[in-house]
Image (cartoon, rainbow, N blue to C red; front, side):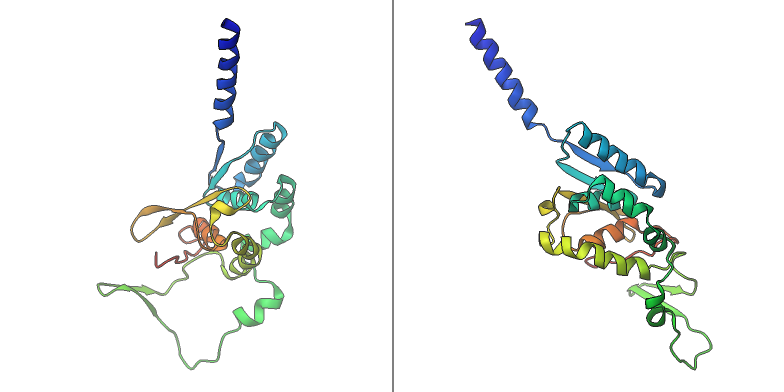
Length: 205
């Protein structure tokens, strides 16, 4: 009788262990990119599966790449590449310069743009809204994430690893948990940082 009880006890423990899930949360900070990759590599080497992954800012980049199926080696190669450094610096590739950096002919001496968020707030925009030109990054994100977005149908649960991207609603001052839509836009929104990377609008927020 004791042997039967012991057997069922081990069997129950096995079911409990199998039911446990591993969720990986990756924080922001540009310098942490390689650290995040190292953590993922260590988990894989110890045969610890990642069932869910969540990230913000740099963590969103690494998390989304892994959720798409990138290996730690693939991600490390991308982060060390000259292309990645160029995207982060905002330097526009020569082939795009004509389209995005040429000034259109205009007789105006200067201009002031107004952003109308609602009828009670008029915000003049004279100074640049970001230190880093977002054009190059936006173009690259379309190319990098478009296939994964199409493959999962805009549902981040259907990626190679279910993914959540954390961003901020700067108007309503609250966090956003992005689980669907365009993967590139979600990561880009998570990377937005005042005066460094220009914020973007997703679903009117």
